[in-house]
Length: 622
Image (cartoon, rainbow, N blue to C red; front, side, top):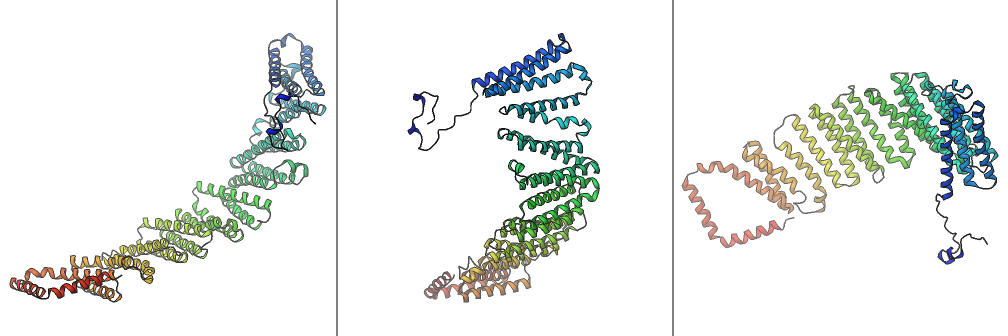
């Protein structure tokens, strides 16, 4: 049974935790021993720096060398001795101090000209110093395998060596990319060799070197001439292929990310660099890069069953297409981008057919691509704005058709939204030109398409919007030919309201809720106009229409058309006869009024009963 160093009265009783559950691990804290060791190592290094700065010149060359070797060797030997005795914290502190002193010694040797090494360029001496520290730490790490500081120091000291060995002017070119990629490869090899404790550090260094190589390669591809641009791009492509090969090896695959994220990340960097290199070739390079991106997206859909190939082609294709299109937009090359935008519908259609999980987004992209192509073509002049508006209206109609066919599926809402946006763009594109006839045609197309969609999904809201669009098309058409007749505007609106009232009419609903608004819009404005602006044709047509509405309401027992028709008829007749009332002789007026009063008085009871019956009959109408 394991024993505990703590007194019995400090141990937790067994009943404090569930049976079979281990005691919680103590929280990691900085112990007093570690604080003392760290401060001691820091003070030792500071003392060495002060000694080098103050007392160095009092010693000869031999003395200088002896001091350097003696102090550094003593610390390293002390680290190895404490390692054999199991003093882990002291071992690590002495190793860190020895490595720091070794770096101080090498820097001081160059700064103070020990043995004439000050003739070596500082950049090259720094590289050699880092290499020496790395080799010494690696050798000591092989001797004292329990010390974690030595392999960590070797790993960190080796990082700047490739970059320092290059001339400063070469760092910002393909040589710098190659150096960083080589450093990343070395870190991968170290990642497979170091102990598990140091793997997070090695993994972080590998990612930093790879990210630096990718960023530098992209910058070189976009800013340099074609030769260095393509060289940097080729290096990134080769690095991506090499990383994928490393994932097939057993040792490296255990410590590297999966092949899918590596393929995606490498494809992103390579595609971004390729776009820049294509741009360096001339005006057509960006067009080719965008087209290549679309082709890779098509390939990604076809390779959907291969995760690695799909990730690489999808990520690379998306970056190529977006980066190329963005550069073309930045250069205001809309005419060149328009056919590419139209071609973007091809991979979207393939994805909609073959990948059900991406179908809603793919349907939206497939419908938005032609609309974008039309807008780009109209922006650069090859396509007139009225023609562009008509094409956008056709795209909207196609979107509503797709929404109708896919009613009840997730992509229905996406297609309908694209149709609505394309319709608004169509009207907004054509309306500023003043071509009201074209706007009317586009509204008619949109209204018909939206109406079909509304019927397919049985949405009253969509149907009402579609009818409103059709009414707007009629109004725009008559406004375009400068028609001022009131019926040209009221009758289309009445027809639209009557269409919306059909379900209520079929269900036998209340007349005011069903056809009341349609009859009111059709009769009331015309009746008012017939009195305000007398016209024989309008007067006859209004009287006939009002009489027909009254008769139809009476026969069908519908209150709204009966009341509105009778009221309109009475208004028109009274309004027509009112101008002639002052022209009649007074005795005729007085006699007629008296005769009417006598008749009403003589038949008062009977008329009162008939009036009540008429009111009841009208109120009983639906």
